[in-house]
Length: 98
Image (spheres, rainbow, N blue to C red):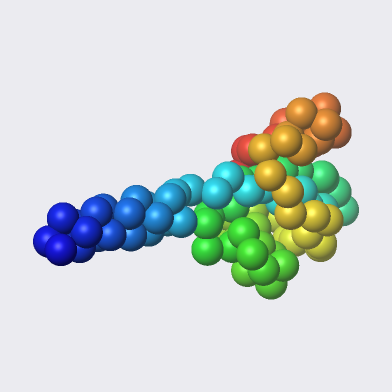
């Protein structure tokens, strides 16, 4: 009986560790600066807390790019690591910059 309980606890611990693992997710976005008007397209890595919600992704992205004086116009999409290569050339200097 004790052996079953210990095995169950070990399985539960492994499951909890697997669900708390980092889920790499990214957002591509469009941003602007005024005076003079400048626009850019970029890619940022999102924190785990922002991966499941467009609103959370917008908030996280806006805060990051604001450090460089940029204003978020739009989060275009949220995606996993499989989408990085196809966006790298388009993002140029703003690929994972912020």
